[in-house]
Image (cartoon, rainbow, N blue to C red):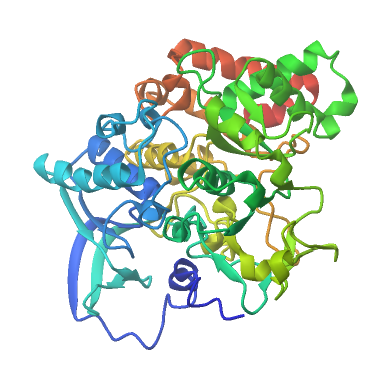
Length: 525
């Protein structure tokens, strides 16, 4: 459908899979050496390097590669009007506060402020005497070699290789839509919205109800001033939205507190056994948090079925609720956009936009369609790869999702801290890094996976994996003390002491065993 110029191939996936041992690339023309070769200078990679430099028993040298020209990962490709979801105090790296770089009253760092922060870290590391070499515009081909921006292949003699790309976000700018698009349809990623403007009579159809879709609708309404009757918003799954301004100051809900809320709500409802095999157990927690002002729903009276920790303040949530007449829901996902601009859904049903044939013009002639359906946390670049241990016997380290919201920066720091513990064996380190089970084998859905569905809480659910990992970390000498001094740790952010954090984890484990969601062997492993 001619989308390749607008939506280039997912180069992350290509560089990680197909080109890893490409015979078309010449032998290395030069070599370098380092203790750690870190591939990926996004949130996870930068956090790993920073904590490694702080806690390594002896000075280490690091070569840091990224396909982009500067550090900051997906922030380089994000739309200009995006801001950080959560307050800056819980994002970035261990050594340096991001909040010092932002002027936003709610400490929501902008794209430019975050990129400036990450650039400054390279200077700060150098000023502190650390040996960190950043190579931007580099394509990594495995076997400890890369091609730099000039096209030269460089071999690296590294003691260890760290892959920090495993949880790379999928962005609409880089990931084409899974649905087909008819000729002549004006489909853009959200990055191009500022250039389009309100336009005389221009209509917009936003596809996707996650944070990217929410940001697009807010930008159309607040910044471009597009009237509501000129917007259609396709929301296949209604989301729960995290309140960025909860009544209790600085107390955004964390995954461990969420489990506690679910157990309290379950007990208050009389502990119905039927809730444990359905979404009712988790939904009761969301209902409780809504009463406490800690989450919002998009449409009053409609129960959300998805949660990806999209974060808004009350004013933004109310503005989105005002968009309710424009929301198209209950029809599932869009499978194609016809050449006339009609929406064709996965079930085969079709829907014409409200302004179709207005003035004798088709919806395709009147409408700009905004692709917000990439699914940021589908991790498409690594989805085709097998699940690997965090620490391998070949000297490879893969930063992965060990702990839920908020997690990316935190997970990078945890893996680095464990790497620095020379008293732990490889097996012991991996035992502290339980991973969520891989997706069930089978043919991938034609429109891609749906992440964040609110369903039953099974033993392998990421929430319970997070809980078990934290319990193990508290039992590891020195780790609990480090966690509660770490600006990236969510319980520390919410003011929990080490004793309070341990007590909450033990209370959650006991409550889950009593509810039948964990057995004692699971609880202790």
